[in-house]
Length: 140
Image (cartoon, rainbow, N blue to C red; front, side, top):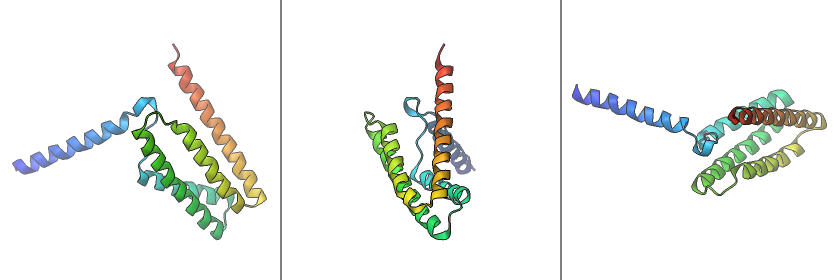
């Protein structure tokens, strides 16, 4: 009985510790994703692209490969940035995203490229609005 109670307490303590670490991002920045989360995100991203761009099977396969490749690279860059706080993570991730797009665009036809660029611009606009709202909340 004592062993069971100790085990339960240990499980809760480890769970709480993990939860607390996820809730406390470093330097005010968003918590970085684990490699597994990066891969899951790449798979969801591919599925969204498949639907919105109406990718055929060959295009989907190529886009999935590219998205997974860059998910792994994002995780590696984020890990390196955690080790060296002088690294400009945002700039590195922006550069990586540009390279990913450079590999994806040749796979798409003209109509798909137009949709892709429109969606990218909309996403950037939403991100900018979120940053502005965050800055406004921080101001006294």
